[in-house]
Image 1 (cartoon, rainbow, N blue to C red):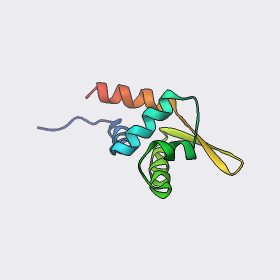
Image 2 (image 1 turned 180 degrees about the vertical axis):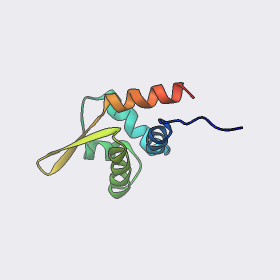
Image 3 (image 1 turned 90 degrees about the horizontal axis):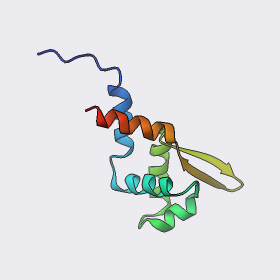
Length: 94
């Protein structure tokens, strides 16, 4: 049996990896529920150290699932709705 070529496999794998940890799922849900969120607010919502949350945010940002803008000394994060919709469609097509 030969598997068909799937040009979306890499995109799905990258986005799925981004939400492959319970803390990252919680961060995504938090950002979906708000228009924007300051990193300190995210840390306050999770029972994790600042450095651990920052690492999870980095993974989510690298996947494109979230965006971050520098606002003075803080970074304000929000969900990338387009990437979230892509993830939903790719999972639904499995």
